[in-house]
Image (spheres, helix red, strand yellow):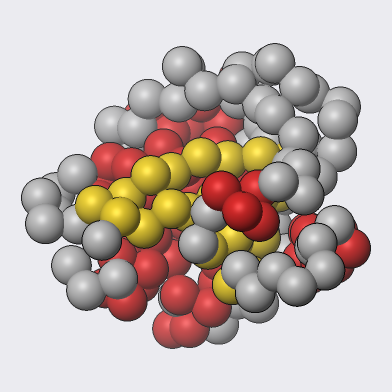
Length: 152
């Protein structure tokens, strides 16, 4: 079974592309895990832009290459394309749910739900906090938790 997962944040230039890149890299170590992964933003501010430079640099320092990713906007059709939609904070979840098509039962979760030991209820936005390492720490922990939940 292929798991289709979409990571969502506000602008799709920091948190969600980092989640996409980190999850893709960590999932590759589990050859029995079949996944299709993408990321999107709830806003249209950065459509077509690469991930934020300082975020890319921090990810690269840990061995994650985000350079090929480009921002796109979350669409209601994503509820049909993905089995699991993962938001980085409550605001993202609210925006996602406001676009949910009637009758859709697609699972929507906070990313930190997969990393309960961190004690964090959201992934802080490093565009504002400037703490790119904190974001990477949380994303790596949540990605590992999600991989474990998927049975890898």
